[in-house]
Image (tube, rainbow, N blue to C red; front, side, top):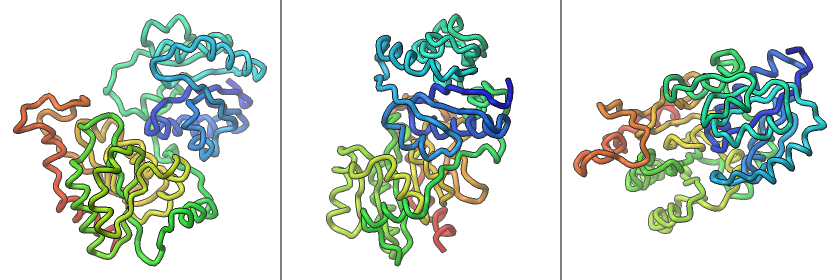
Length: 338
């Protein structure tokens, strides 16, 4: 490789994984100062990628998780072939995700050995799931390991943040707390909703501005009673991903399940309390600045199970989350608000 490498990255499809993968972009820009980094990603991630200063161009590929999409993949391959990429790094692990670099005949195609796709790669690695952190799994593909200089960090201007604050009427006279109660993975990553409601009430009683953030309309309905009977505000389903990033950049504190919004908050250098259930903070930790937050995780005998439904009996069901109390979160939060 030389200093004028042209990289094509096949990006992850989940918000959290995408943010973690920024460490790869940072490493490449540091090692090859004049390199070009272009990314192929699903359209809803485009705005987030444009907040990463290492990236030169973002190319949308509108394909669903279960869609092979040969025609779409062939089309984007023909469109991008003129860029003469020297290397492709495939961060996702499906056979189909390696097709575009193979169709383009990019000289170096790097990824993990999954779904018999080694025939599409020129350099492949054996993947042992959950053996290493997700960030180091990505960084292994470019020959390095994580350090704080590679920590994800988005570029948001004060004007952009102010624009969203004005749009959603954020009040800067009090401290702003954002609560992120969703996790797309499943119920085993979601702290009980009644706990979120109680936590919101406590913050409000202490005269803080409290906002719920997310996209699930069903989730929004669950929080309607507490929102309607107080000045707690729900922005669930009312923002796009870019606006969420702008809003979180203005937070005095974020409390979140292990989710994409947790990783988003971590990339914005805001105070963050992260709640882990079935997943592991050793595998997908919030890559936040030192002293910027707390990770709440009960390392039970069954943890982490990485399952999206709890295998335990009713008495112990979701014990990893239910054993985390509102008192515990409230006490952990207070030093970041004083």
